Length: 408
Image (cartoon, rainbow, N blue to C red; front, side, top):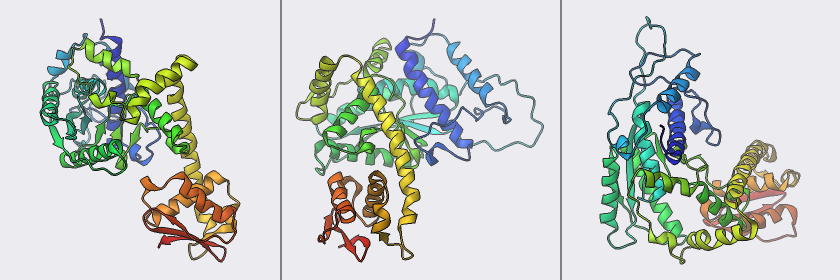
């Protein structure tokens, strides 16, 4: 008898991401080069196995699938006692008589864990799957210092990760600033700490426990802000510098992750901030989404998550179009020509303007749609307007049929 369906679902999601990471070690075109595209099937042999020929990746994946489904049912303790070395897969490959080939070192994957149900489920799945695929697995928990006893709680979470068999594990304390509001400031501090931990340990990737419900909330927040299609695309499955961050659970609902923790007897900490109405996302989670489901029926979360993916595909296509069109709207001196910009579709033109403003020094996080709309009017509604002031002391103005965006 196999594992509980919820446990099987989270393990499968993590296994797919680990397969991708192993692919990237040998692939000349890793996922980092195209973070919105899902890499192909596993193409790397596991540590201790002979090199695989070009025709074998599918067989390795199939063998790995058989190894998983043929394994006995696993309780949480199965992850605790996972072997330090991966099991051998029978690839039935012919003996290799050529010179030994240098194999890449086993990649290290970290899980960012707050102790909540989503991230504890993710940590348990990583602890179970990583040894079976020859991947090293560790964990990081971030102490934001926003609640009394947060340091003790962070150490407790770190100890739970060690019990699961993860190594290295560390609890990192951060100082949360005030820029952008409490939620944004905490997020910025958290990602800075995770980036530093990944660099410190040489991690290939950091897994994040965002679920389909989180994705739906992100889309609704983007709608409320009147943001563009990129904001409506929500969180990417792969993001960060070099594709560092991976989100295996974007197609798994929050209840499945919680159920997986329950059936594995994993202790879970519920952050009181998640139910505090002072936070926008908390109000949306406990008031907004339930009201939408009551008015529109079930399936709102799934529909919003689907909207995110469709929006992401469209945004990627428009970004690529804008990247190609930008070279055609600049003169020999590299200045933007207003007449050529005017001829472009608004969605493409505004992407070029946004990119030019960021290149000139405007902080991307402070550059909103209203700023770009004002700059766009210098192209489409020219009435002799004065210069437009943008964040980061950047100024945009029209001069002799050219659009000049520079530090003021």
